Length: 469
Image (tube, rainbow, N blue to C red; front, side, top):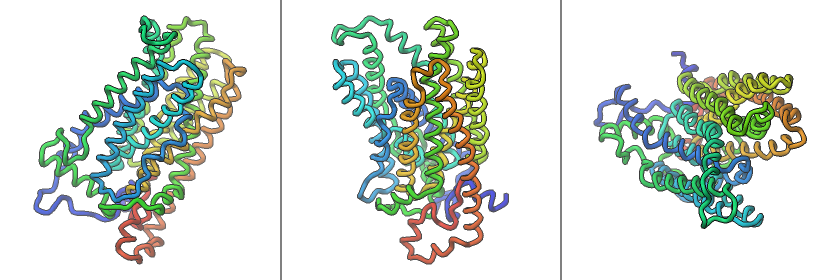
């Protein structure tokens, strides 16, 4: 394989030994087996959490926009093992907090209580996405991370597919006598209780680290730890959270472009959530039939998201798949703008959903892949999700009730955002290729002239670190 092609996968710095001293090197089959048993405890559990996180909150996701980076701010020394344990507890605690607030929503009686609940819900929800992303990044290699994030984020589209149907079922149930008037309270009561139960599952079954995983045999645990050590070669094993590592995330070109594109993507997704029920209702279907017709676009979006995440993993590329997916959004939006015919608009919704939902996981993974060491990676995940969460705020101001049912203004802004995603992605691909070539040519070797401790903290700035393209 050409050295430059190999380097652009974003893998780390030095070529470490294949295994610890005194141990046989792991075979490819053992390497695969060492991380596959994590799947029953990690990806499906986190997928269920995200599905419940998205379903009850609806379009009020803007409450969380400024809360995402709180989990990353620590001022003490943490080993990678300690960080994995801490993030596991934080994620489970956030799920518990989210479920508790959701459960309590069933008992609110006035607007003031509603506002307090929404703020608390935003705080609880704010750290979920970056926290889970960072937790997964401490278990999986960069190329493996894309598929895992794609799977658990696909829960958002699946919750859109079945959330309305479940809500209809909950509304048809008799209201409990302990609740104030309004059957809508059933939704928050039941979903909150389920989420609280899942938090208990997280505390009990989410593994703390590979070497303590009950799903692995002793040799498999050793191999799993070696995979992480090899992946993180050249990084310090014990790292102090300092502001220069935090600022490094904020001055990263990859992070800013991924964050802006994530924001533009969320405008499209949230806009679709807003206008799709109105559009389908205008076709003359009953309420139940309209709910059923919202399911197929979301299912197609989930399948396509996982497929594209798999292709990202196989190809070790991110940008090229964005440039495949975003134009599908453009075609879907153009169909919705250009034709008043309901069948054409419904077809446009399929394309819009299929093109938009895969983009978020790709941008989140891309930023994570090009961030090191651990502090910078954690802040990068939080930064991308925090800025991206401003998208629903924009959607609330461009998809106005007076534009119903076609929402031409909102769709036009959305279309412009999708074109901007293509332009920004192409720029980032060129930028990262150019930077990788400069590193290969030795233009960044002057960074190695510093003392050993400084060099060990270079992370993604290290001359032998290759940016994922």
